[in-house]
Each structure stands twice: as C-alpha cells, then as structure tokens.
Image: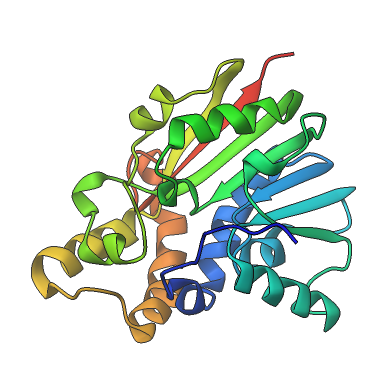
Length: 238
C-alpha cells in the first residue's frame, strides 16, 4: 500500500453530508462537463461520488490522500453503499502514471486544501485528454475566510479572477460562475453579526432546506455574479 503523510483535520465532511439540496444544485451545474472517464481528486467520504456517479460513466477514479478515508470508501463499496465500478486509490495527483488520461478531472471543495494550487492544476492538466475538462468548485471570496476555514485546513478562498490567474498551460477557461448568493449573505451575517466560529448541524440543515432552494431562484437573477462558492471549468486544447 502507498503511504502518504496526509491525515484529514476537519469534521465538516460529516456535517455537510446532510446538505443534499446543495449537492444536487452544484451537481446539475457541472454534470454537462463530465465525460466518460472521470478523475475525482479528494474523494473524501464519497459524498461527491454519490451525487454524480451513474451508469453513463465508463470509469470513475477517486484519489484520496487520507488512509482512514480510503479504508472507509472501500468499506462502503463492500457494503454496496458506493458503486463497485469506482476505483478508489490512496494518493494524490502526483501518483498517477504518466499515461493515465481522463475526460474530466474534478476538485470539489478540495483545491483550497492544497497549498501549491498552481502546481496542482498543472499536474492535473497533464492527465486530461484533448478536449477534456478540468472542474473546480471552491469556497468564494477571501473576506469570508474565518477561523473555521483555518481549522479545517483551507489555505484560501477564491474568486473567478483568482482562478483565471492559475489557468494551467494548454487549457482555456470555458465557464466561470458563482453559486449560492443567499448562502453568501448568511455567511456574512454569521461572520460579522453572530460571530459563530463554525456552522452547527442545525444551521447546515436550515441553509440546505431553506436557503439553497431560494438560491436556485435568486442566482439566475444575479447572473451568477456572486455567491458562497465559485465554479471554474477549463478545457484542454486539442
């Protein structure tokens, strides 16, 4: 087995697994860019895989640097809770063979955890097939950065401009937009008024059940010009 020094520090994966409406929302926005073969970097506890995977994909590879999480992913597979077709591996993008290429590579709430994000995307682009898509979803706007971000290992939050600046060689920006303008307002209130260090399960459920459905109505009205999260899609030349 490959040994990695990485151990996940946060518990928000357990809390945010209840955010089913949010996952469906961003899932509908990135699914058009997913090809037959998908590489998911930072598979976590399988939340993204559950949202996106179905029989239309010829292959789905999940990389995860945390040993305990990989064991949990494989245990869920054995129990039938995750598709047997998925290939979960211990490691990161640097551990792929040079000839492993994918139609789509996704980083869902992952890139902000990676200190050398520029190098990461360069490596990712090297594993894209010509015409393939690199997709990043991350927390938006550095002024929303809190002690909670720091505690769970976030190095930064992003804007569309910041993500454009780290476009890897051989790729072009295909699409960029923000999601969850309503949640952004709630985050500002939580930071500046309530001053709570981290979201409770009750807050997550309220946001997911009430605010996210509202955001799906509001976001198109704003032209997806601002929000709690940002999505960037690049396409490899070819």
